[in-house]
Length: 279
Image (cartoon, rainbow, N blue to C red; front, top):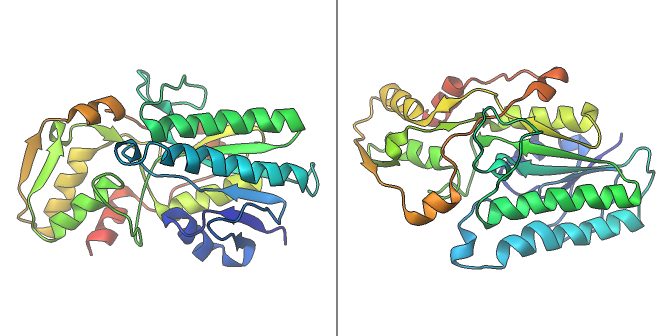
């Protein structure tokens, strides 16, 4: 069996991927930088744009410096150039504030915020590195991922689940722009299935969007959750902060034509996913 070399297997998505494909996956320790199998699956990353407020170097060190260390060993210890491929997990954040949706892999990127910018820089470095040394790559840009067992849910990361918890507890809710914005959500199990399909059969030396391809209105999701729970949570509309205006994108959903060409179909609807979390 050609094992998948997973860097970043202790995070939310990585740990779920490992759980679903345990026999096929080798998980590296957090600071390990030496690949041991042909199929590298790289997920080490920060998760939001807020680190600049506390540690100006964190996004650069995590998203770029560590990646380069792994790539150096990858280049020097390559097993078979015809079989080996470096699968890199990126984010919809790299698109930034674009004006034509859904976002296609070919859409111009205008990332805002240190997380977003370093993720796009990591993509560009990987492409240049692989072209320089004749190696193969694959970049997977993920939508908003939600699901069970995310231990780092907060206002900054996975705000949807943060609010769902408040709804379960009948707590008051504050929403920027009254929740009137669009996101592309996919349940973590579906995301892992999509990643596995791309790693096994995806286009080489290309970028592939992973998402539902559907524009979910955030306020409609919240209203659905309140109704489902018979929650007494009250919603308050609050203005966006200046920092939020700088780094946040109002509307986003992804064109997933490439993913569909591979035969992928979501198994968990947004309603099913929300209900599973609320129960």
